[in-house]
Image (tube, rainbow, N blue to C red; front, side):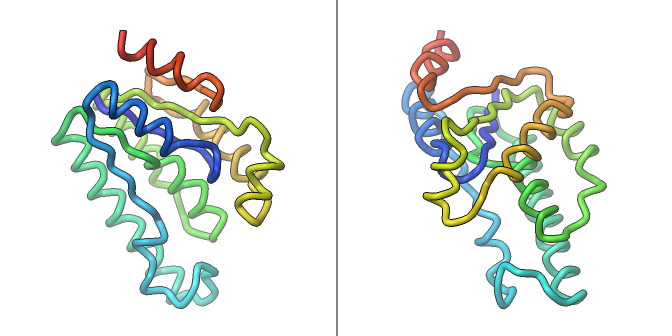
Length: 167
């Protein structure tokens, strides 16, 4: 079983991934969207050419991640499609194909974990900008996801979740 951990910045996704990986002996796949768009002059997509390039990079990135998920088990994805959809949409990218991506992932029967902020204002402050819209979009996408096994968790509940998954 693969595990997908989603959530806004500064909520503890990587900490949860590490706890689960240590207990379950899984591999963590941490992929930052920004690593894929370094070819852009900055993260603010301004021109149609930059928008098209960012969309192509995003599509390739997701296809690679889907192939990894389909070919392997025992992987923890520290962010995947919901984060991509949230942050990309806020940058003006088209994510009309994400329903099919979610359905493909659903067919692989992963566990989808949404890490909610204990205090979104504090997370926003640590991040340097407001994350309230990001979290609202992520929650909406989480509820709309066709993935069957999903759970919401806050930082304070990480250890309980790890024990529950581990058995």
